[in-house]
Length: 139
Ligand code: CO
Image 1: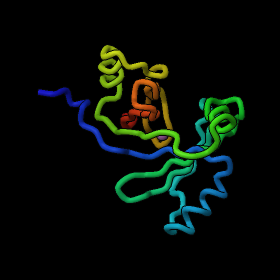
Image 2: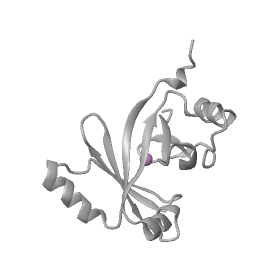
Image 3: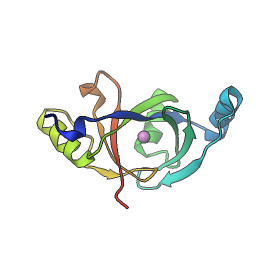
C-alpha cells in the first residue's frame, strides 16, 4: 500500500510579480478575477495575493524585501512562473520521504501563506521547476 503522502493535487501556481497591482489588473481584465486574500509572509519577505482560478489557485508573489529570495529572483530572472505547489496529506512525511530518496528540500517544513505548512524542493531535482509541497496547518 503506498504511503498516504503520495496523494497529491495541484494546490496553486506561484507567479513572481514586480508590482501586484499591475498583475491584478491583468487577471481582472482577463477573467474578472480579484484576490480573495492578501497576506504578508514577513519571514520570507513576500506579500501574497490569492486568486481563485477554479480547479486551482494563483498565488501572486511580490517582494517586500529586495534582499529576500524572491527579491533576488525578480532582480535576476524577472517576473513570471515561479513555482507549482502540490497539496499532500502529510507534509512532514513527504519531506522525510523525499530527503531519503535523494531530493534536496530547500530547508525544513515551515509556515507558509494561506494557513499552510510548506517546503520547496530544489528545481535541479525536479526538471527545472521549483516545486512546493504543502499541507493544511492543524487548527
Ligand atoms: Co506557493
